[in-house]
Image (cartoon, rainbow, N blue to C red):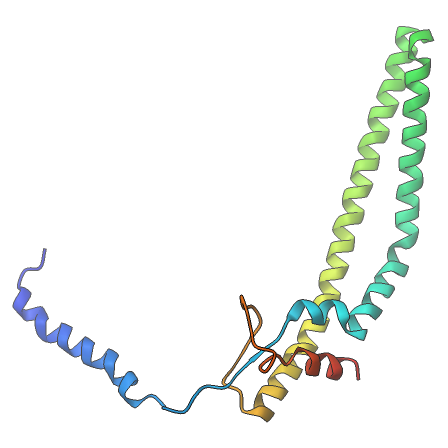
Length: 171
């Protein structure tokens, strides 16, 4: 509860005046806005395509190794399923444990592969984003834009500067 509501009235009036002041002095000139589809920069630019090719080359050997290990696991699993009825309990338990250990290794390798791949993609995307941000700033200054948006439910092609950024990224 307020102890003295009348004492707060001047404070409220002063705050209201301060809040209204920027509205009264705001420029009447329309704002200039640009729009960039950042996902296009990350997929369509030459820089992005080169990064994808570099990552593919970097990870192809590991991917092949993982696929071979997965195929070997499937083959051993199918063989175990076929042989299980004829195996002794001790042999069945030993081979089941081997398959279980191999499955854990396959899952670990796939998880590590995926994590490493995502990390590298993030690094490459960060490099593209850094360069694109500098280009966006450059165009915004040249065109005297007040804001450049990167997410919108809809934007007019008139304010879309994505193609210009793509051309500059590709240089």
